[in-house]
Image 1 (cartoon, rainbow, N blue to C red):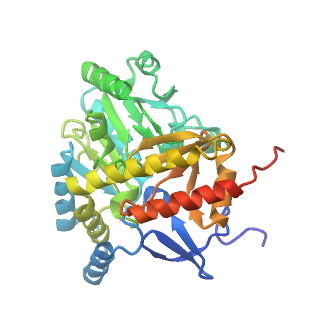
Image 2: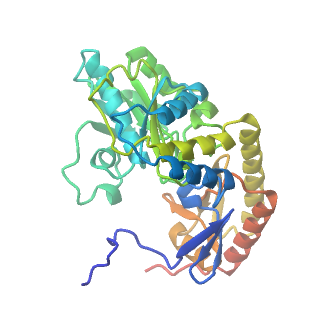
Image 3: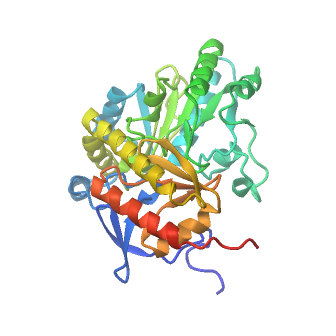
Length: 395
């Protein structure tokens, strides 16, 4: 057989982790890596956090899965917690971020359907976005690497320029259901939208009875130093997708909505076999035990500023490689003057794990529990690696 047992859709690196501890990963031959990728913003408590692992172990001994045909005291409790902490009035639990976005899309369309306007089914989305890899979510982007070979794409999406309010408003017509966006683009290159842009979208939705959908799969759950990034912007969405960090490494997601936005989501309109299972709920509750308080969030903001400052000082010594630092909290990006993916590959050989993104950006997404010593270690090793890096010659 020429094909590998694991379908070869990932360009897998030689890094082969078998164990994690805190902010470190260890390979099958004992190699140590400083993990400032966090499974792409997933392992927000690092690896092996005792409160999370104990909660999962305890629940696994009690009850792992039951059908959503039955009552869910575990799901009801976590949903209420999320509603109490956010704008939302109701929650649908999923297994992943892309499922949460799918639910958000369906919720927005059902809102207009229930209001007697089924023609309002087009969502305005934004260039360089990443919402997942289902047919609906790749149809919501304009990235060739996401959509090539998967035609025909689904109708109902209109892609315009990110952070361009005039372009977004000009795209609104009688078929518009609302706007779907990452308030801080992750895979697109750690690109925060301006506060004026977000406020303008909210105003347009209020004036035209449209839905504002936030994809906070990557930027949510304390990553920015706010429980959710919409708080940083001071703007409340109608519907929001959450995942990645919400389970601290356990696969889960959630679609949150206001009562108004969810008016069309009645019995039989949506479902999930595994979504909201007791094991996932235990993981989510354990994560929120740690992160959902102002002291923790303030600490993330402070550490984010210290990390940003250290990176800005460091890149001044390597101006042949770096242009600057951008992002919010502990969701930071290093804009490079050369290929970010090649540099990330090099860093892996130096024991540093980061993630490449669009626009030649390196994503810096450490666990939210890092300490100052980890920041110093990371910046020191990054500087040494940058000094030794040989930019590959152009083909």
